[in-house]
Image (cartoon, rainbow, N blue to C red; front, side, top):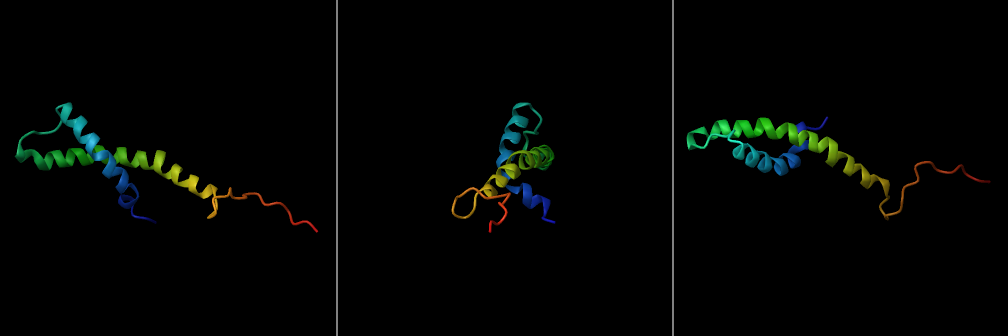
Length: 85
C-alpha cells in the first residue's frame, strides 16, 4: 500500500496556504513568533483532512479519466467484440 502522506502530498501543498490564511483571518492562529509551533500544528490539523478529501474527491477520480484512452489517444475498448469467423 502506498504511503498516505505521499498520496495527499500535492493536495496538502495546494491547500495549506488557503487553510492558513482563513485560520489567520478568523483569528485562530497565534500572532507572536513564540506561537509558531502551535500555528504549525493548527494548520496541519486543519489542512490534512481538507487535503485528504480533495485527493479522494477530485484528484483520484480525475486520474481515472486518463485510463479511458489508450497511448494513441483513442478510446479504450472495455467490452471487446467476440471474434468473428
